[in-house]
Length: 548
Image (tube, one colour):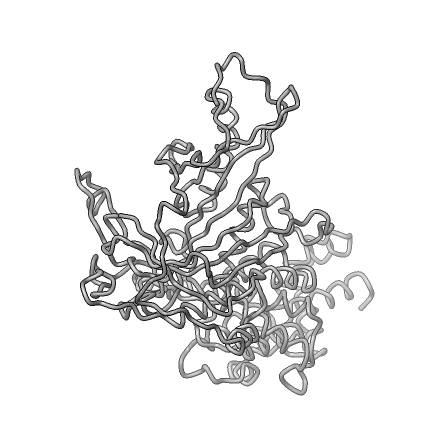
């Protein structure tokens, strides 16, 4: 259907409709159907493998080379499927999907068609707050259920480079097959999204899920996850008719910014296209487009094939695979708390800020260490005189140590590796139990924040990784003295040395108390003792205002 632009009826309302296809490279040691190393498994700052070195006869599709199924890839896919509320197939099968790409030597891809591994799932997604984070306080009526059609397992293609190393132009393409054969989980949702905010929040949540389960490293810049929104609009016209625009699939987006940009551009542009062409959704009308991040527009690529065009048929070299229920339940029981649940726990129950909670959840190993340390500090304590403390207090202290002291040292270690590895706070060598002891020492007023930082640094040293933080604090003379007579002596000296600030505090000027606290703490240091600044401040105020 087409019409002259001037004859097109006015559009009174535009409703966005989006479904997602997400390709997740799985972090297995080897590729999907061969023993060749898998680049997506290595947590590296920079890719170290030279082009076309992670290959073998199976990847190259050489005559006589037979595929062998990667059990670990199946297990990781099942875990992601369970996290997305999917049913897991009792029997699954691999099929050949025929099409030619220069970076796919076999001229077909081993994929799944009618018997996918995971299917019929759903995820309840909270709305986004003003910062784009999950709003758990929103009423349930504001949440949205996103249907998961399927999550099927296949192999990735290689990579085509259209410029020379160093960014130099070339009039030919370079083929790198290192990525070819990488286990790839393709997740397909129902078209249940009606805003870019929802889509981006889901993509962020899915990345956190895959990383939290150890299924993928999830480094978007390396293509570990590639998002392909299928976008169209329902147009309400002035004459009461409703028109559905053709679906546009935007290919290979590897940033949340690009996902948002592509959806918002299509939402604005599809009504204009309909006004110009009159084209509506029909068989064969779907097209694919790319994203120009510089111009902020989608660009046409090709018409989209239908399933029949790929000539699927069962792969003759791979038998159907029965999935044992006991294996599925073992995977289910070993799964950690999912990221949305951790975010809710860290914010709603433990009182962390949304920023701190997201920083912890963003690194699953760090989030696990945090959660274990808080559990220890709030339930059993660690020493006879270090009794448990309330959850919010333990959470705040543990988060401060991990996100400040430990994160600083992890960044320094990453930089020192010259790009060979990423070091996290959880990789530094101290344990969750040692972190819990530091939390309790701090919350019981036994050490200062500076001492907690110093002790954490000492616990990162290989020879002290089994040390008791409380004993180490005593050995290093970092324990705060709880001698009332000594505290009075330091405070009296500080007041005598600083008569004007003392007079200001008596007059109600709280800003002057800092100088007196500093002077009292210097007196403590001069005696070789550690003072508690909070306790010293309280004692000074008592002396100057309360007659103490």
